[in-house]
Amino acid sequence: MKEKVQIVTLSNYPRRYFTQFINSCAKIGVSPAVLDPGPDYSPFECGTIKWKLLYWHIAGLNADYVMYVDSHDLVFVHHLEVILDKFKALHSAIVISADSDCWPDKQLIQRHPKTADPYRFVNSGGILGERQAFTEMLVGLGAKSGSDKGNDQGQLAAYFCENYSRQGFMRLDTKGSIWTSLHFAEHVLEFKHGIIRNCLTDAYPSIIHGNGGVDMRRIIEFLNL
Image 1 (tube, rainbow, N blue to C red):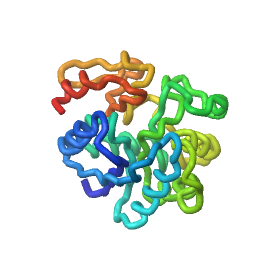
Image 2: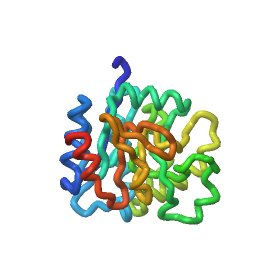
Image 3: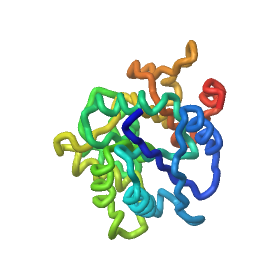
Image 4: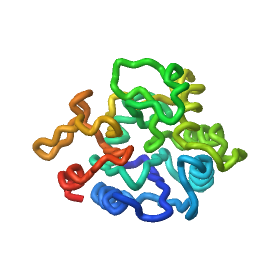
């Protein structure tokens, strides 16, 4: 693949399925950059630290695209070539993982664009974008000047609601084609003939995100991670 995609994640200690995340990266031939946010970091309380770390890491990158993913409850299924093809088909400089639940700020429910697809709301566990657009988003999230406080998903959701109407700038993966998020939706996956299918959207997700404490053991066994 000629175009360079840098995968970046955060981890201050190897929680839950971190080993399986690393195994899934190795299986598709990628080495993620693992940034350490410090021992007291919590994305629910210190969200802007995430945006600051990503900003300063990306500033020194020679990459066409940047992908942020969570590391303790997420695994890759497909190679980057497949993921990048799906990204380009969505015709947006930034694509964000989506969820069926609006959390933590329910006041943003009506501000998210309506869709017939099941994944309508921002999930901050997966973001893929062109490097320049990704950097612009991080600045807008306070990466250069913001307080370290705040919930990362709430911050990203508010930013998305303010900016999704910009033509070609950012959108959600509402069909779960790149990322399928399993919170409140553990039942949506079908495992058959070595393939994982999202039964709600008939998509074949490239990344499975077991957010909300979902048990991922069946997925890990199926993928032999």
